Image (tube, helix red, strand yellow):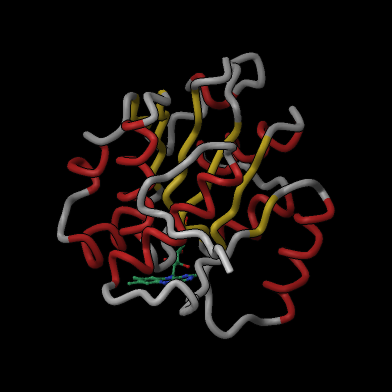
Length: 186
Ligand SMILES: Cc1cc2nc3c(=O)[nH]c(=O)nc-3n(C[C@H](O)[C@H](O)[C@H](O)COP(=O)(O)O)c2cc1C
């Protein structure tokens, strides 16, 4: 189904990006299926001032990360793809190796095997050779590696504008417009 997307929130810095993306997808009337790792729940509280439960209210369906029998665990559950936002280096490694011991990892594994869009908002600084190798090889496997890097050419004045820019980049990967995204027009 084209209007259904999986969102995974793992324990890297960048939870406000996930919050803004969920709001943007709601505006586009895309059905969001959300799974949050334990690390993700921690960073949500640290970085947004919201609880994982409150972030969950922005999604249409929320899954328990331990529920490996949930719909997201099967390729027969059709989606337009998955965004892992933010994607920790641990979750990146799990996806890279196919070590699907939680629902978030399994859903990403399914997205890859079904050749659907997989966008990884991978965040760490600096990056080790392990991180770089995993990203490079996942890119070769078809995933889009979209690190939430800073940009200045659109003259951001607030953190929200920086965040919006990343959300716009993610929405571009999903083939959707985002009103908060200021494109480079020369
Ligand atoms: C406040 C906070 C920020 C973190 N930021 C990052 C990060 O940017 N990148 C990263 O790879 N791990 C980061 N970590 C560590 C991960 O949360 C940790 O490796 C965790 O095991 C990831 O598990 P998960 O991928 O299942 O969520 C952070 C942890 C905390 C508490």
